[in-house]
Length: 103
Image 1: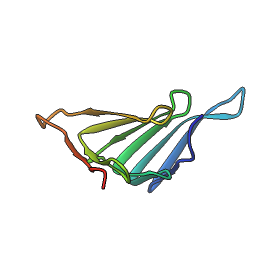
Image 2: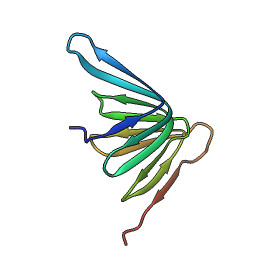
Image 3: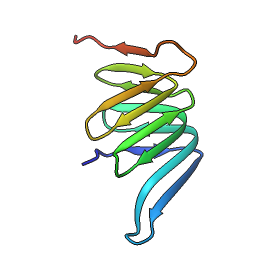
């Protein structure tokens, strides 16, 4: 169900289901990069939850979508299964979103 996504960082830790020997979650820290065919994200930390099909980016996160534009906030939760991005801000009053126009 989840599209092909790569997750890179200076430190990666996987949480496993001991009974099924499957990955449950992957956390990444330090210069995190997340890529799929249409998007690229950067942050200082990321948590990928396999069951929820979600990637949570924190630490100056930004997602660049080749077709839609750029999204920034304090915390970005990207639902890989349905392409939704939830933006949360603590300090800032507003998030930053740049949407590309069709050309």
